[in-house]
Length: 238
Image 1 (spheres, rainbow, N blue to C red):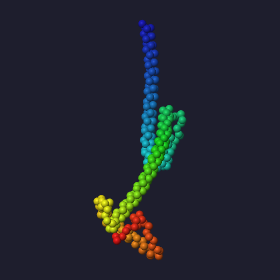
Image 2 (image 1 turned 90 degrees about the horizontal axis):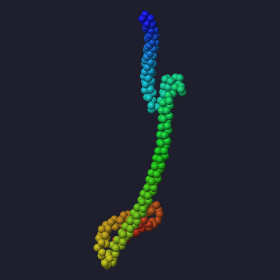
Image 3 (image 1 turned 180 degrees about the vertical axis):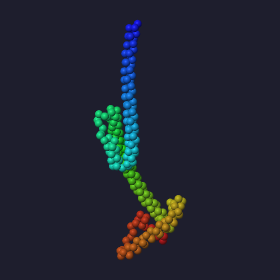
Image 4 (image 1 turned 60 degrees about the vertical axis):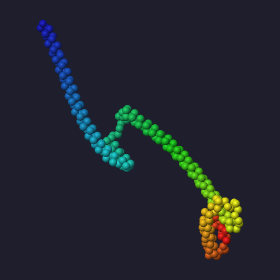
């Protein structure tokens, strides 16, 4: 029993020693972790301070958003201040590179899409301009046709006035005929008599004014070619 107890005691001493070694290692590990925690906290505080300072500087930089040159200089100074040694190539994260490539591809596709849209819009505008030009030409033609039609109606109206005037003269010198006795013609003659007299008076005034102007210039008085009735000379009442 004594030997067994001695063996157990030695085993306890060995285990106790092992436990003491484990406790010592754990104490060292705990101290190391505590030092790491303190270091991480310090780094975190420093990072927060830098982030806060960077936000303030970035806010001042944004104030030049409407002035490209000053904005460029401000961003350059900001980069030099916070990245004094530049960025090492190996420090770039793969996710950052993928995101950069994705953004670049997106911007390139956007530029190509805008270029195609610009070409399409130019073609649409060109077609619209051609269509408007053709419509203008068509409208000018219609205006010219309307002017010709107005001139034709004016000449036709003058011919009608001439016929009415001749028929009026005929009523003073010739016995009425069945044609002149037509009620519609008589009504037209009666309604246009005053207008014809007014036209005659205005024509005579124009002729007198032209003859007076020609005499003042020492020129002969030629017979008027255009008296406002398409070459028709108004007959006298006698």
